[in-house]
Image (cartoon, rainbow over all chains, first blue to last red; front, side, top):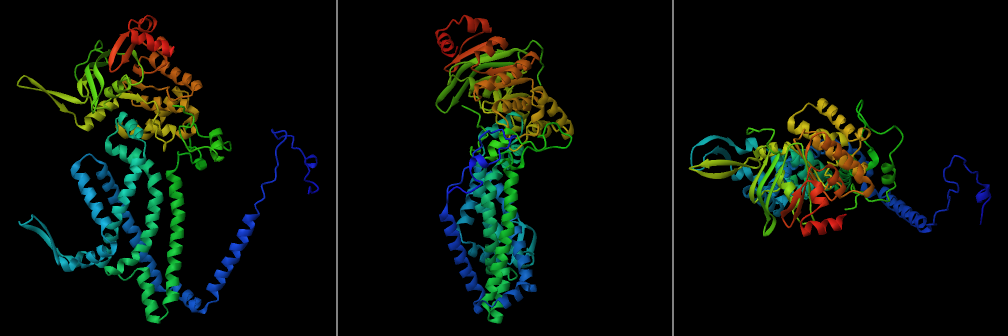
Length: 337
Length: 263
């Protein structure tokens, strides 16, 4: 079987190699991988063929409406709803999670009740309700219950369809995110807040400087998941009704032109594209919050003019061991308690 | 602050009791640590020595007794009304200020893993004392140099050995210019060959005149550095005195048997 040039004596020995008899073994043959790859490629080609050549998909229409003004505007509104509601929800969720963990019984029960209600009722119903708010309560006023009113306004002037959709999505999402944040806060070693307390830090500082940044490592992946899920939940805002988002825009065109399928493809394409971009963003956010947690890809931080830092081009021993991926990501690796 | 004099002890513990639910961990501890002295607390596990240290720093709420650091009652305010003294719990802000004057080093280091060594040391001065960042950075670099880690300033804790992490933790505590340092088994989580580097930093610190309370099993360190050795068992102080007395000529059976096991 031996091919010329592959026999050990023929191989040139690199005199600078510190390993005298370096092993150049052939890998274990994995024919199954090649076979399965080929089978899958054939199946994929069949699927693509089935999509491209099927005239019912009307790719010309898809291509036309992909760049349609109303569709692109719908993408804009969908993005605005997604990010707007997620930002509001994250702020609310951190508050709710902190309240849930506090030893103040009032805060605890407020948080519990909020999560119970908003997680326990369907988002569709909630959106319908926010849309109907102006009907249920035509005038909103601020004042003492059963007493004087300080000011009042007409509900429909303030809570337009957009704001109802935005807050409807945000209030619902906050309940889910609160549980994610709570799990994240709970994942941080209690020794961390203890050390911060021993240094004289106050609770708020301990939360924002020490616990939350470490909890982010646990919070970010499911929050990315929730963001992607939110992107598509925005299609429910027609319940409000808010009628400018991507799904409504494409459905409207589809119904008008009697071509629903190509327009569904248009919507699917845009959702998929945005999701892909979100996944890239999530990767970088995860990497940022993973710093110092055995993820050595970023290496020790070098500060200009500051002392220390790694010598250029010479990774530390620990970096190399960690990069090999054969050890656990445990900061207490050298510890034998 | 109350009027303090140089002769007043740095730490005064009177009749300290601590219960965790029904578990009576400290059963009346009285202890004085003079200024600038090193007090080593020995004892078998479960004897309450770590709890004692944590009570001094108010990490545990005490059940009975009084703890004074630098003459100041920790955690409470005494209010005398109609001849009766009532204790009022101090606001968390005030407690935080009291803690800021006491440095603490933990068995498991508890460095902030998302910050570099330098950032760990800078954190409390900037966030608690409001020291400008540039100034805190310079000081942090000095402290890291003092513990022999100037070249590790940019490393994250996960990239440091246990001994290096513990030395960063000591530098972090020193950054607050504490008047008292508490060490809770600082070398118990270390590989044997890394213990020496941490003890040597602590020895230098003791020589510089820092008041220290050290819970440890390092008898050699106690013999060499301690001004007083306290032996605890089952929540009480069994024996205390200068190291040559407690370690060299223990009077109590329990001290003798403990030392026989450790040495």
